[in-house]
Image (cartoon, rainbow, N blue to C red):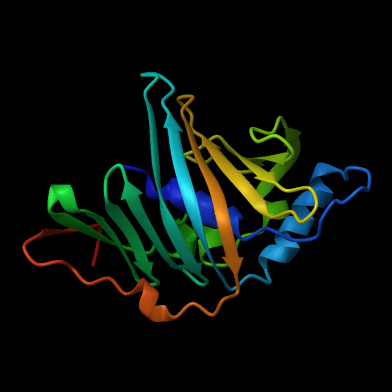
Amino acid sequence: MVRLTHLFAAVALCVAVSVGLGAQPRPAPDVLARSLQQRYQGIKDFSADFVHSYRGGVLKTQSQERGTVSVKKPSRMRWTYTAPEKKEFVSDGVKVYSYIPQDKQVIVSNVPPDNQATTPALFLAGKGDIGRDFSASYAQPSIPGTVALKLTPRRSEPDYEYLVVAVDPASLQIRALTTRDHEGGESSLAFTNLKENQGISDKVFAFRIPKGVDVITDGPH
């Protein structure tokens, strides 16, 4: 199962798509990080198609999945995986629902409070700050024609070592996000058809528990 923190990491930076570099000299990485943060603050919602690839560190496993994502600040998201296996991860702002039809179960947990959330989850809540929470440097882009920014958390995070966001140099629209964990595994999300500030309804993030599935509550409720 994909780690929800990896999804939060994607949400954290999917919304950072602002002022372009154009033909100007490449700015210092911390300057670019601040530009991303500035634009992020103006994004209220977005949707996109995605391809999610994972390469294991120790076991060297590889997998690729695809689907659609919708996000609305604060704290609402819906990740719908369509291939090769159908599954959903939905946050309505209060609860997070993890549903894999093949398992016939829904795991329900609380959206973590700010003081217990990882840095990506703070971004999901609309309260993170790239310049404050990360040390920025340039990285080798995984997609030709993009600019890649490596973001290393200033405080140790248990679920990931660093993030790399690849953006279009003209618009700074995100093209890919890679999360590297402490075992050397890499979880990458590539985005297409990204749309911003479309006024997504809260109804999109309502989750109805299907009939005939087991409901497992994770954590206090």
